[in-house]
Length: 413
Ligand code: NIG
Ligand code: FE
Image 1 (cartoon, rainbow, N blue to C red):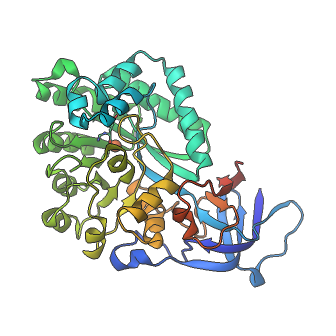
Image 2 (cartoon, rainbow, N blue to C red):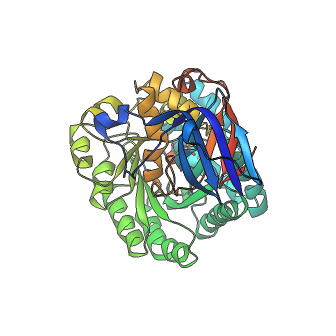
Image 3 (spheres, rainbow, N blue to C red):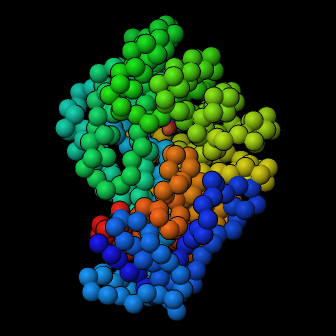
């Protein structure tokens, strides 16, 4: 299957030679080609350039005329919890009425509420509900997504979630990475004996998850009221023994030490980071850990935003992701995440685009195959509707501007 997209007004995020990530002042620049073509062959990006060098289309080639439109690499959403059962709009109303996220969690709401709903939902039904969300984010331009477990909190239910993630990977064209998040919350029956739950994760959950090859990464919610640095350390060490690299929920609710422990154990990313000061920034500099910000969660919960500008000005890279989940961010719209990055965290559009493509690809371990328009990379791209500039994407913050989605070199819609 060969596709030639021609007359592209602007081809966005072009890479001539591979980059690990984009950091600091470089985040404000974006490589683009005006009046471009893009050639896709056998699921991969074969070539691109200006229209005057475009290949002549032979028979059997599908031609798409993108006059007035732009082509982006698909968004990479490196942090979601989109496998869940039911929804939690009643807690949303509680929040509006003034309860905090922590207060709702303490009353048995929050993550434990989702765990109860998930326990009472069959694997098939969970797959069906989650598939709907996967199709939704594909239509919104996402071409790769990381999905976490963590609403199971028992061996059996964590495996149920991870099997659903595997089935989504097998049955949909989007690229999926899977993360084991047994340490998302302490189940009710372990309250007061939290270390016993940590032992269960280490001695039972991690070995079986690894033996069934159900996860790529391990996550821990290292924060005030959830898991301590010491517990996080034990779980990360156990995960690493089984080949699971860390991706940590850190510093959302307090200066928890989560960033430092993530860096210490070589985590691929540390995520949330609302509480980031000079020590945390120092720890991240000279590390291989991607600071990942989730403005959708801070927006929905009405909480502090991470100091994105300060981080970039210190020379760090940042990634942006949706955190799609039923409690703190019931949306997987990466275009809206870009807008939040721009409007609230004062990113310029180039920084927001870098943060949702190449850097978020790094944060899920796929930047060598995704996150930019580069020869040989997987052909996951989208064509916009006619737009005046790429800045129009985050600017028109609720308008659906995605015209055509191409995944693995095939037109999805
Ligand atoms: O990333 N912070 C922890 N976990 C999720 C929230 C999950 C939930 O409330 O269901 C998050 O925001
Ligand atoms: Fe999360």
